[in-house]
Length: 255
Figure 1 (cartoon, helix red, strand yellow):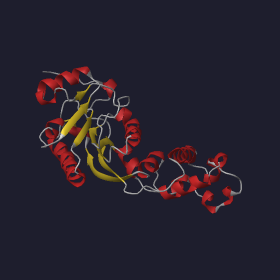
Figure 2 (cartoon, one colour):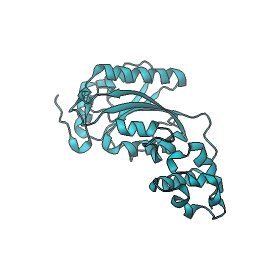
Figure 3 (tube, rainbow, N blue to C red):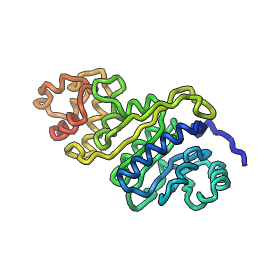
Figure 4 (cartoon, rainbow, N blue to C red):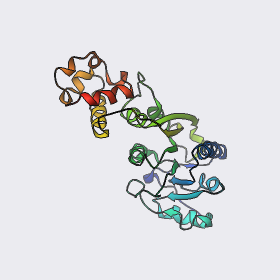
């Protein structure tokens, strides 16, 4: 059964077996560490990862795929996937399991940031995510304070997850090859998240700080704090100089 590759859906299908095996090895480590047996694959496409996931014993696998043609291809190629494919948009679907589950996928690059925010919404149920992104996005998620790519995504993810950059993936590992390098990361839910007044306050502060990242923090977030608080020396810094813990602590001093 043949399939077409749809640029409109950002489809680049992994064809390098070694990369697939490396991702599944990282997954197996997380399965062993957590004891979780439920797995959600996002965007299985032509099944490069799926065929390995189906071989893991005692796993309850579900796969979410928007493209009708790929759903038909997957069900034809892997009959055991019947009734395990969720034919929906990942960004709009409900939580797929009642208990904890691991998210894995070669994510469509055109919605990768939205995928991360969706996983953040599910964080209490999704303690581990192993995913492939455009390298630039993967680096942003994993970057530390002081880095040029450290930003909103870095801080919001690292407030709740430990992020590990696993390895690079070359363009020729895909069909068709993307114009950029890719990178695989693993996110593991933190045992203790930094104390903050509320997640909403934290999100508002981080977004305001980085929306004007070239400015001193004082100017970028002045609408969120009283003048007296803004005299503190920490507001002389720029957003990229603050750690996740710094942002979390500042939420208690917001108006």
